[in-house]
Image (cartoon, rainbow, N blue to C red; front, side):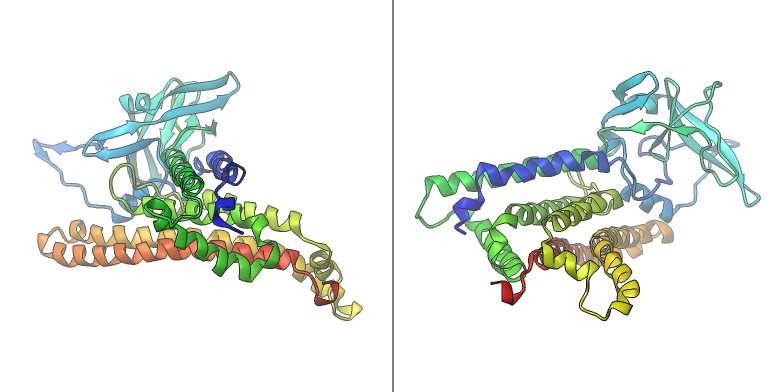
Length: 384
C-alpha cells in the first residue's frame, strides 16, 4: 500500500476518534495524591519560630505522577482547568480555582498518630487528594480512621491535566498527519522533504516491520489503527518527560488510559476474529475429554492478552517517572547540595533512557496489537 493512501481523510478519522473515546478515562487517577497542590502549603509557626516540615518523598512523587484539576506552569503559576460535575441537580461547571480559595483542614487518627491534611471547599463540594466529594449537610468532609473520605463521590467529567494533555496530543497528531497527507498530495512522485522526510521511515517501519509480518496480506485494513496507536502513545510518552508546561502529564502512566487502549485492541481483535480463531477457542485440536480444561484456558487467554498490554504500558511508564523523581528527591532527603551533582547526572541518564523506553513501549504495544489481530484473522494453509 502506497503511503499516499495511508494519509487520507478516511484514515485520519481514527486519530480524532481516539481523542474523543479516551476523554472519559483520564479523570480516573492511577494514584491518589498525598500532597496538597503547589502554592497552597500550610506553614506552621510556634513561639515565633517557623517549623521546618520533614520532606515526604513518597507523597511528593505520588502527587507529581497523579492527575490533577490544575496544570502547573512554574512557581506558583498554574492553569486552573474546568470542573464538570454531574449531580442530582444536573451538570455543574466552574473553574477549579474556586476550590483553592477556601482551604480547609481535617484531622484523623491512624494507628495512634494524629494527622492533619488540607482539603478544598466550594459550593457543597470538597476536593481531597484531587478527588471531588459531596459534603454533608454541615458542609464538612468526614474521614474514617485510615483517612479515607466517608462522603459520597460525584460523577466527575472534569477537564483534568491528563485530558488536556490528550487533547494536545490529538491536535499534534492531526497536525502531523494532515501535513504529511498534504505533502504527499502536492509532491506526488517526488522525493519527500521536511516533516514528510523525517516521519516516512517511521511509517514504513510500522508497515514493513509490524503490520506486514504479523497480519499478512490484510494489513492495509489495520494500518490507520496501528499508526494511530503508535504515534499517540509515543507522543504522550515524550510529552510526559518534559518537566515544564505543556509537558509533565503522566498520561501513559494512568491505568485508565492504558485500560481503554487495551480495550480498543481487544474489541478490534474480537470483532475481526474469523471462524478458525473461534474454533481454536471453543473446539481446540485436542481430545474431547480435555475440552473442560482447554476451553476455559483459551477463554482466559482471550482476556489475558489485552490485560498484558494494559499492565505493561502502565507499569513501565509509571516506574520510569518514579525513578526519576526519586533521584531528584535525594537532594531534599539528604538536605545538602553535595548530593545534587550525583542526582542530576543520574536523572539525565534516566531521562535519556526514558526517551528510548517511550519509543520502545509504543513499539511493543503496536507490535503486540498487530500480533493479536493477525492471530484472529489468520487462515489455515488449506483454505488458500
